[in-house]
Amino acid sequence: KTSSRRIEFGPEELLKNEEYRREKAALGDMAFMPHYVEREKEGSKSDHPLELCLFALPTLLRSPTANLPWVQDFAGVRIEEWWNTWVELNPDTALQYGIRDRSKVKVTTQNGAILCTARVNPAAMPGVAYIPYGMGHADGGRWCKNIGINPMWISSRNKDSMTGLQLGYSTRVRLEPA
Image 1 (spheres, one colour):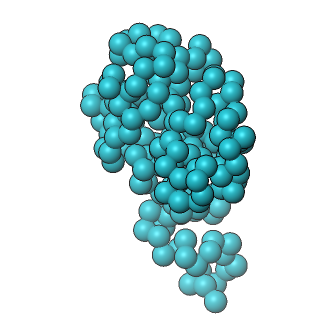
Image 2 (cartoon, rainbow, N blue to C red):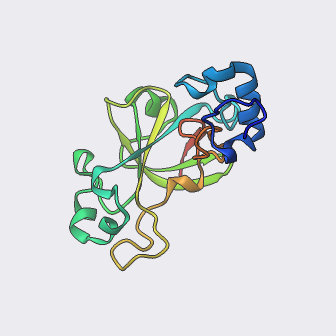
């Protein structure tokens, strides 16, 4: 039985979430329909001027594949980067921050910093730092342990009120040559 005496399609765990309850109160039954909600970004635009976009590499979509050396050999084949974590930048963004292709870059967020290789890519959107995830395992075998960095360590801790999953595209970053 529900307090509204109607059939409600929201999971009980979601109804315990304060942010979700506020959203449901504001939207009514439309809260269950697909809709866009603007989320706050972690980090101020003045301190962290770029957006962080994490993306999955098709070769590293599943954890067991990270321990196959041949997969590490062509993880970043389209930009000629292997056995390492990189950040892809638009040429104008790289120039603005004094970053050259294949140079080491410190990527900083409110949650910490990582060191990776800069790759200048004209296909990258200006003002966005793209970092692949799927590397940076603490264990898992000799071919994946301590190879690259896991960018999730520095990404937003904000969670989506509907799914409880970590919010993507809600982290701002600062870049500086290392």
